[in-house]
Image: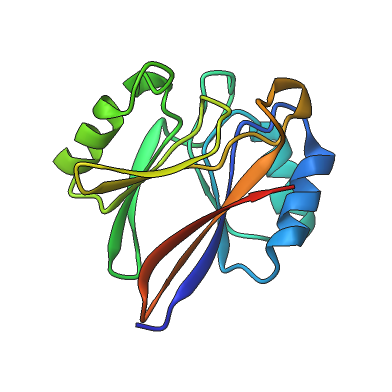
Length: 160
């Protein structure tokens, strides 16, 4: 396995400057995951940098080319990417975890709550990068990093 380094952002809500700062702080990444809510900002970033972005539409993304959720492979690991509103992320993690289990995912990456989280639910790993919107954050803006390699699947949260 060659290994990958992937940035994770979401709930940008117009905070393009913070998005740019986060991507710079990530260092070298293979691509970027977007958990929704900030479609225009992500499009602008993609246009300006040429960075490959895999994303989903959030509940505040009224126009988006991205689906509500998607599954994909990151090296040998299956990932479910969703905004989280469709799974009641603000009221608990069980529906997200169950969706991950049903789709055979090792990791569910989601947003919506604006709270960074890295945890495990019944052997399904869950990652929420938090928000890049200072006005909508609970204690600061943050992003995530996912790395795959010889050590398996690792997830990190970073404050900006």
